[in-house]
Image (tube, rainbow, N blue to C red; front, side):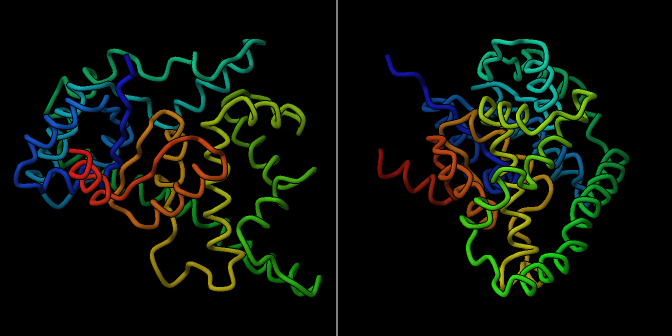
Length: 288
């Protein structure tokens, strides 16, 4: 018997789903054909919904209903920590054997409905905005540095594929970025050889690095930088890339995130289909 495919809806897709007239019926259809994996990060984003308590409660309810047909996966920072610590302690590290969907996680999140209150929303929104500002700051600083490099060499990088090749070459910057992320969880700074082994062994971590590279390319390298429009992917969108290896389908209502994650899935040959919300439901109608 074929395994039931795992599907993940990002928060934008859950938002669209919650607005559907027949939301309950669509959730039931999802449970019938898919194993729905809900992100703890979904709840973190929903918790920052300040404008409407009713809207926030509805999003929590829809996310909870999706959980009845699947499970809940750790926030992306905790998930990365689990993998790094497992790699540090186990010479036979296998990323698929690392526990990232604790059985009691969903119950913990939904046990107290009053937890998702306005006070938390204000606090969570403020925290999210600060983290986003911290995420953007390095990009704003280094674009002039890239421009100077391009001028001194007499040419610029003209494609994301070329950018990846440079940044992931021997001694490339992305091994240092990976090492810095690794250090926060492991407490030590790995040499390039070690971080290369970890990236090769851990698709979630590799996915994050490629998504981060895409975000940097759009902001700092592209001839037309993503400065006067919505960024390709904000901080949460970028770090959500760690979830791509954990599903067969990833559904979003955000066009920029769709482009970013489609690139990641293609580059790493993950076998994950990244679909826009409407595209997913249209494919369901065709299949029916």
